[in-house]
Length: 346
Image (cartoon, rainbow, N blue to C red):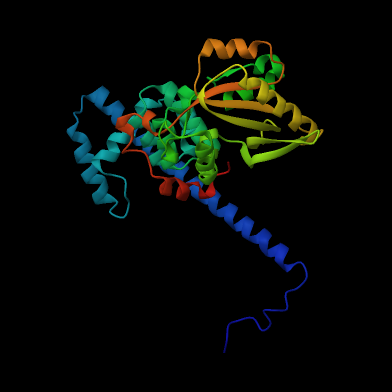
């Protein structure tokens, strides 16, 4: 006797919507269960690390106690992984790096254990670790993405572009806009050298748009390339057009293959005016412009932006040869990044 339903084709009205709702609820329940298990594991590891620190400090236990503890715990719990001497040392380092139990419960326990080990391995200060921990949690970074962001120095590059956002935008929006812009942008994933021309870079960015969106940061959505603007019967083309979901505005990106020149901002400003009048809706905020160039004189860029009322920024981009040699073999490949990005909300 078959276990299959008698009439698979006769779907009741509303069944498809109900099934979709059930799938969503089951998926959410699975995620909550996974997060709960991870949270308990991270808290357990922190407690073990805290105890090791305390006993070594108060009772003078040497480093060999970790070897003994690893052996005894693996003997008592043979089905559990994670009690190797190396992992116990990570637990001790974890408790030493974040001694505040409340912070561990509210922030650190939201990340998987090996994300936390990555923060311990690659960063030296509490300030740096907290910054990347916060963003990894906020943007749901995989471990590979976290490694890439650290090794391409995301923290040092965020909010450092030359802009006039303070003068051209309300404070709340200008702060977010400034933090959303980097300098320099790393386009190492394109595999291009400094000899590449503007159109070649543009083509490669669109081809690898997933990685480009990751480099731009959370909130950017790709609208199009060489976007046509018809102004009084004349045709103009925007290099790259994005929409920023948090800023609720369009972002025009223009690529320049050489050094920044003040006249570049005139062209960018023209595009911002055209997008504001032809593309943006009444619910969108004013369009932002970002000029990406191979190099710039910071003072010249500041002067050029000084009399501009439209919100604009100037930043550099770096291609393959700019990547520090010690990172070239440790960064994940494009294929790894594409696999990791499957579930990330960009």
